Length: 133
Image 1 (cartoon, rainbow, N blue to C red):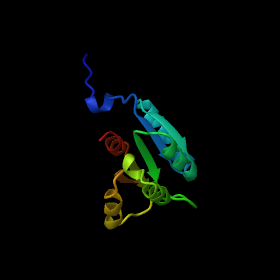
Image 2 (image 1 turned 30 degrees about the horizontal axis):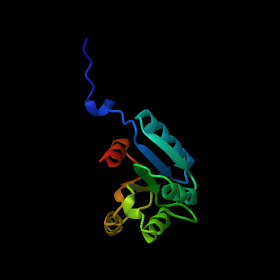
Image 3 (image 1 turned 30 degrees about the vertical axis):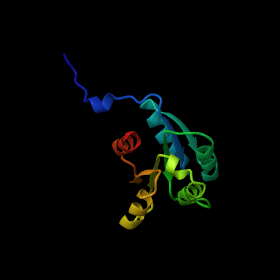
Image 4 (image 1 turned 180 degrees about the vertical axis):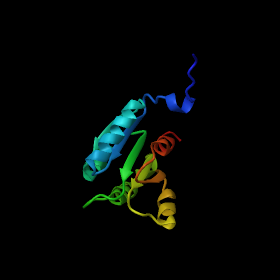
């Protein structure tokens, strides 16, 4: 008996390093487990200021960044990186449960370093596409 799996379902990504920055520990835990199962190395932080320091201190293939975090938001991180002229060196995938207007999304996507914008709840196939494209 032959069993056929669609190739997209069995691709494993080794060697890609992903930083996940979100204040919600449930979300970061689930994303981390999913990405590890797919072969991604990943680092998690639930503290946005720590996330900023990690971005500035180490190179990641992709940064998954929540926009809506209390006290210091993903927008604050993006603005800091932009002010320090290192945003352009990043590959950031933004995600949030907050409703974005089309103009807000387009403004963010115009910035060098912002790869894509996903809305929560995140569809895992969309996340993989955003990370690997």
